[in-house]
Length: 316
Ligand code: ATP
Image (spheres, rainbow, N blue to C red):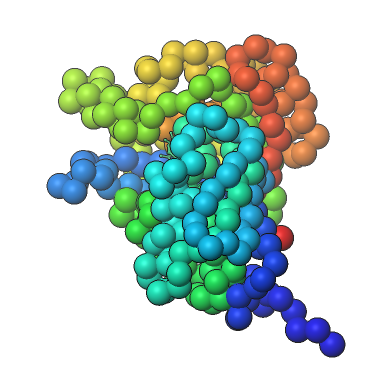
């Protein structure tokens, strides 16, 4: 009998000479409460992360140095040099484990760049899981999540996936444990991205001028709605402190939000720092109808259906 290549967490003990292909989801924030700016330049966050079935893929193969190629969203715009989060993550893993940073990495990208879906962080999480398997460093998922926090605030969540409460700058995670349920989403992808630091800066300006809506309070009602598995309740609890700033910087987002509401979405919200907008549907059929209406509305580049929660970065 042959030994399984991966254990139940997707780890391999001895490294592998073949290719390791890792799939990683995008994240949305069901709740994104932005607190004050900290002395270290980060905002204090209270967020509920949710991983959805829109995926990037990182494939790792043996090589005699560290290289990256890519295809799909962002090809030609995104650098494939050391500033790419895939290579940054691989370097951080090599430094933490002592493994030589040798791999040929390939990124297949579907998650829109600078979309508020944490695609770059997702790619970093996938690179960590792929290189851990290729190099046989065999870290636990919690160890990988610890290393992930060095790469970026959203990266630990994308290693774990599911639905999680995030605090600190988003990297301190407590999984939201609920009976299994599948939520149905429509993801309205915008033309072009928004810079996360610019959206934070604009929120700070709006707040200083007294022009921002009152900050969100703790997501207790949202967590209760998740536990009750009630989509209408959940829709009423979605909240994002960054939405006002994202809409101010990209006024067309108000039209996308209105188009989703007119099409009968249970609720809609700007995802993270935008400009992607996500809508909650009653079920899969409702999500498909909504996506068709949104695509016809001309208020987004494309509208995709997705479900959540899904697992974090995993070998496939
Ligand atoms: P955030 O996680 O800040 O909310 P986002 O979802 O809005 O980000 P990302 O797609 O994660 O946006 O990318 C933000 C920036 O990160 C990009 O504009 C790019 O400069 C840089 N970046 C580096 N590596 C990657 C990568 N592999 N994929 C996407 N962006 C990357």
